Amino acid sequence: MKLKIRVIGPLVHDIGYRAFLLEMAEDLDLIGFSARNMLEDDEQLVLGLAEGDLDTMDQFRRIVEIEHPPKAEVREIIIAEYRGTVGGIDAFGRKFSARQLRKGISSIIRIETMQGQMLHKQDQMLLMQGEMLKKQCEMLEKQDMTRESIEKTGHDIVDELKATKQYLAGEIPETKQYLAGVVRGSAQSIVCKIHRAKQDLAEEIRESAHSIVEDVKETRDVISEQKLSMEERLDRVGGDIDQIKTKIGL
Image 1 (tube, rainbow, N blue to C red):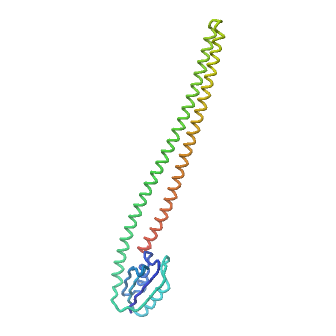
Image 2 (cartoon, rainbow, N blue to C red; image 1 turned 180 degrees about the horizontal axis):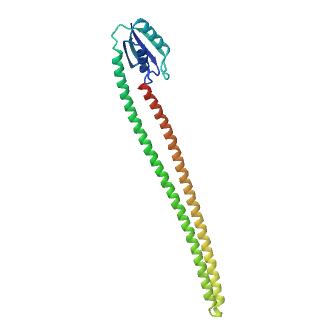
Image 3 (tube, helix red, strand yellow; image 1 turned 90 degrees about the vertical axis):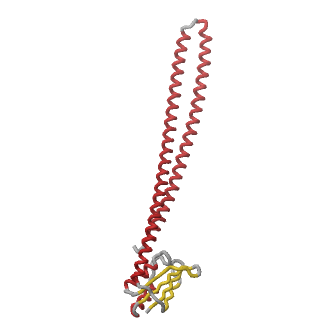
């Protein structure tokens, strides 16, 4: 007895339907079997041919009508008697296994290439993060150096004022009052300059700190987005691997 099986639906290709039918045929020891994917009116179709004795073919018919791969979306199954030639099941099994193995190897190579690209991109992101942290450390070191420079300048000015006072103290009495006024004016001017310098430095430090914080936030946001993108791609890679396993019958 020979049968023609037509499985029609939105999703019957690339989900292991032919492998499923072949496995059922082998379990029932059919003498002939073949299956191929086709399109009919823009809809997916699996066309199968099977040959065996009457009782075995009745069992095969019932299995095909009731069971199907987990991810399949089937609209209709049409089974009818067939009068043409059906190829041997062993020959089809060898050809099918070879095709699925070739497709699986190509998919694995493609996935490995994608993984390599993703790892390279991740390395670039880590390198960029390291450069940002290095920049932040350099800015902090610059702030420390500027602070130390201001403190040293202040000490030098104080020392200079002390030396000036000592010098003036030993000058002629008639010029003491005049020189004391000059010193007071100079001291006030110096204090005002120091105050302005401190204000300018404080503003520069605040702006630098704000810039560093914004850079770090931006880097963290970029890294978070890349991490989410990589997780999504890894999920898709996992899905591809599951499909490959299904295609090659694993």
